Length: 116
Ligand code: AMP
Ligand code: ZN
Image (tube, rainbow, N blue to C red):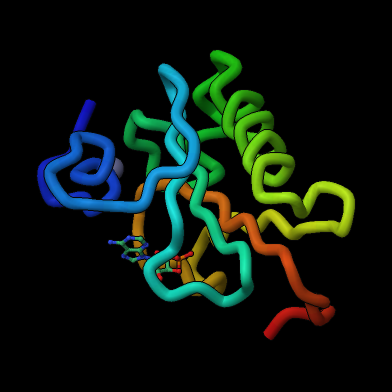
């Protein structure tokens, strides 16, 4: 169910533009507006779940599908072999700013650890 004031629900509805790189019946992947690496793609379920905890509780295979989509995008972007990071900011200390669950797929450069 789309949430009217949710930015990513609006991207799913194509009400606001995004550079979409992958789409399935239940998932969408599009380039982050403020990329932090040569590949920085956001992978989301089309349905609205607030964060990874809510997606995990969906219990209908959707979380698996988001993960599978993220890897498919990594292959498509040419970073599957060099390596990539998949980050779901979730909860008060995580820095999450958009409350429609999204995996950040980052790759194409050496990524530092620990993250900031
Ligand atoms: P987070 O801090 O994990 O909630 O990440 C939200 C991400 O959404 C940030 O990396 C933003 O750059 C990105 N973002 C915000 N608005 C848009 C947009 N309209 N299209 C694509 N990415 C966006
Ligand atoms: Zn939403």
